Image (cartoon, rainbow, N blue to C red):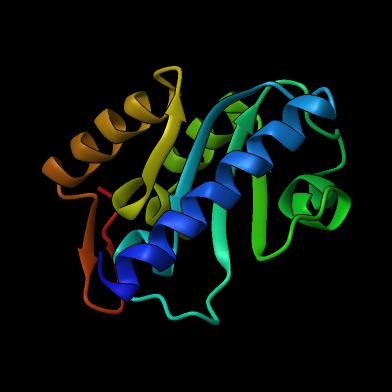
Amino acid sequence: MSYKSELKAAALQRVNEYIDKLVDAGIKPRSVILFGSYAKDSFTEESDIDICVIAENLPEEESARRSLSSHLPHKGVQAISYFPHEFLELLEKLNIMVLEIVEYGLPVIDDSTFAKAKVILERLKSEGVVKPEKDGWRVTKP
């Protein structure tokens, strides 16, 4: 196993530990998506492990959801979270962060919420509304 493969395996172990921590805290994730450098295979040993948690029973305060790891920390894990309806609405509104997560993210667990988001993004791309580019997104609302 290469060093990079070992790093990724260790990162996935931390993600699974974080999922256990969420469940212990009473949060039942519907989807957990690995995104950022670990999803794009551009990580180094100093990279944070970026995850998106989609769940129903999250903090009501938006800032608490966007910095979930501040409220429920775990070494090396940076977690943001969304309610399922909120995640899909932000995708339809072409939120850049959500576009990135859906385009490049890797589902660790999924109840079909992320799969539904992938279908929506593919529709938006096929309609020419959005297009991923080297350094971001081209958004051309019809």
